Structure formats: C-alpha cells, structure tokens
Amino acid sequence: MEGNTPDGTGPMHVPFGHIVASEKWRGSQLAQGLQGKIKLVFEDGLTPVDFYLSSRSCILYITEADLVAGNGYRKRLVRVRNSSKLQGVVVVEKTQMSEQYFPAVQKFTVLDLGMVLLPVASQTEASCLIIQLVEEQTKEPSKNPFLRKKRALISEPALLRTVQQIPGVGKVKAPLLLQRFPSIQQLSNASIQELQPVVGQSVAQHIHAFFTQSR
Image 1 (cartoon, one colour):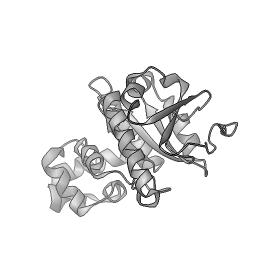
Image 2 (cartoon, helix red, strand yellow):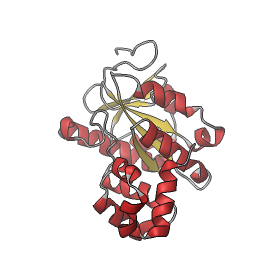
Image 3 (cartoon, helix red, strand yellow):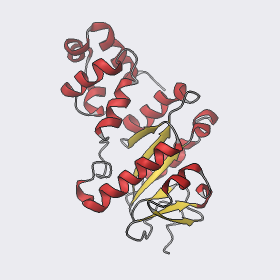
C-alpha cells in the first residue's frame, strides 16, 4: 500500500469500500464497531491522521484523554489543515469529563482553522458516523457535505448539536438561529444587533461572547 509523505500529510491509497486506520486503533471499541460493516486495513505511521476514508479525505480523532491532557492535539490539526493534499474531518469525544474543554476545541477547529468538527458521545457513536461518511462518499464524493474542500460545513444534526452548546441557546433557540444564520461562519460573524431579533438581547450577548472571547 502506498505510504504518505514524511510529514504524514500526503495522500494514501485506500481501496474502494475500505478504511485505512492507524495501527493504534487495532482492538479499540471504535474499530470493533466498524468491523463487519467496513473493511479495515491497519497501517503504521499514519500520524497525524487516524483514519483515511479515501486517498485524500481523512479523520483526525480527538479522544476524551487528548482533551483532558491539554492542547497537544492542535499540532496534528494544523498539520492537516496546512496540507494541500488532504481534507480533514475532526471527530471529538464530547463526554461528561471532556465537556468543559469542548468550547475551546470547537473554536480552534471551526473558527480558527475552518475545519469540520463533529462531536460524538462515544467511540461506538463515532464508528456509526464514520460508516455514514464512507457511505456518503461512495455514493457521490463531489456532493459529500463533510468533505468539500476548505469549507467548514457540518452535517445538519451535528451543526444543530454544536449550536446548542452555546451558553443560553439550547434546543429551542438553536433551530431559530440556524434559520437565520445557516453556517457556523455566519453565526460567528453576526453582531449582537443582528442576533437580538432572533434570541433576545441577553442570549445575543452570550453568543457574541462565545465566538469572540480569546482562547
């Protein structure tokens, strides 16, 4: 199998209907969730990538432990983001333990890097998501909303869940916001005056602070 470039950000030959996974995922709950549904090929030395869905599309997986340990995951994300050869999707474990760290990784991934971020509650949920990504890609790659190059588009359910995490928003106001601001970029660039008619002054201030606060 063709390897990637020395910095780990080159294209990888991925047989149709397969996923190439980093050796570190062998025996994991995530890998077990994929087996039987998708053909897995394990490879050494995929850093910084965890899974290749195709030769150019890949997944960077941030575990609960990665988040708790600090900002070490950021270097991996930046390497893939700066590569012209790869389109990366970031999958993050958002659990009770890692929830407090989620806003920082969300802001860094989506706003600073412009990458797609998809939160999952567990590795089992992540395996279902990866299967969905592969199925979408095999249908018609050019129309896969997860993998359009250099655009931070997020699947509708994941985008809704992301917006719900903003303080003061919740399940009621999130759909209203997305009707008016259909992408994270538009929402993050909205002024308090633009947000206020949708959610009221107090929540508008919360949203504006969420996107403008320094890391």
